Image (cartoon, rainbow, N blue to C red; front, side):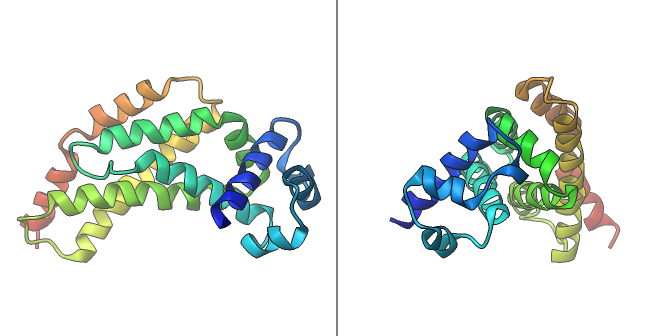
Length: 186
């Protein structure tokens, strides 16, 4: 039952974001639309921004399901871009309504999870420390998020395929090379 309520609130939020900015949507709007009490909302979320964050994470985890290996990360990246584009009104409204730091933190968590799986897999037979692996994952995380934020800021004009393709070409072999370079420079 919990996910049914959360999903209904997410759907309602996305519907309202097509009509008005995030800061004009009230909890009463959402609860009335869903036919639930305010207490039901507060049982699941502390505020609308908490709902926004949950919705973003849910969309992202659906996009990334099983796409955290070297052979599949490009597909996972493409699916992240597709999920962002599919939710364009929602994403643009959130991007304009909440602090940039909040959007960055969401994207950092999302992309770190994707890259961390690739780094772990690529470092399997290498003598690199956990700190070195984290450094490499963070390095690429910041790069991905910068590209994604720039794409969002420009209105998502390029296709998800084009954006994921550019990143894939740029990144080809780089995670493995970074790990091997770390191993050599101990």
